Image 1 (cartoon, helix red, strand yellow):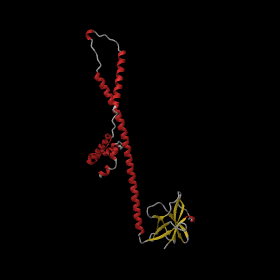
Image 2: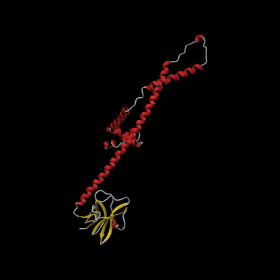
Image 3: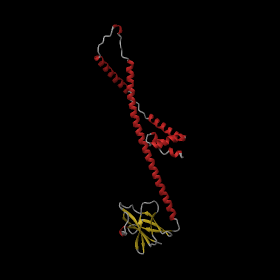
Image 4: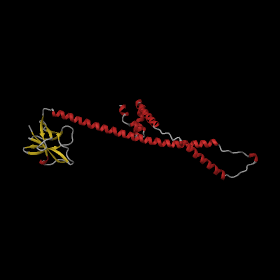
Length: 276
């Protein structure tokens, strides 16, 4: 098993943050028993998360303690007065008369317990908010990682297409047909690469304006004086493979509606070139 790849998959972070499924959690716990490096990675992330939370902890304001004590003192005084007003007057026998006093330390223990409860509740709210913030940051990092991986895959695919295109362009069996811009569109240029063995046609749109929405360039092969559809030009890296053309005396490109047309729009012709 590739433990490093498993560690970098994000499952450990999901487990610690409570986002892993029961199956994923069970698998991780089992792997921790088998692979010390996975167990260490889990421990490291838990320690880092705890250290980050403690480093950003915010202590309660200093005056909060005094306010709570003052409020509790007032509350106890009110309760004591009410009890004194409503308590029945009992005269015990002389031989049983005792002086009963309220245990003062108990008051302070009760007050301290309430203070700790208030502080604990505040800290719970604080850590929960930090947990949500950390979870959101983690999810954003996972999304960014997936986006970078997808972009990297696209770049690799385009690079491979460009490499294959270079190989085909240098193939001696390929016939190159240059297509300069027609009158009024001299700045445009494209190149056809025609495989003389398979008769497959490839187009390299060297310099063509970006087509408007709903429009697409279409390649035409002139066969016996008639235009034959050779396919629409899609967005591709390097050479775009078109239709198989057994014979042609000329190639041209026109701008048509998306999906192509049955006949070329001559007023929208951009480039053209003769074979050989």
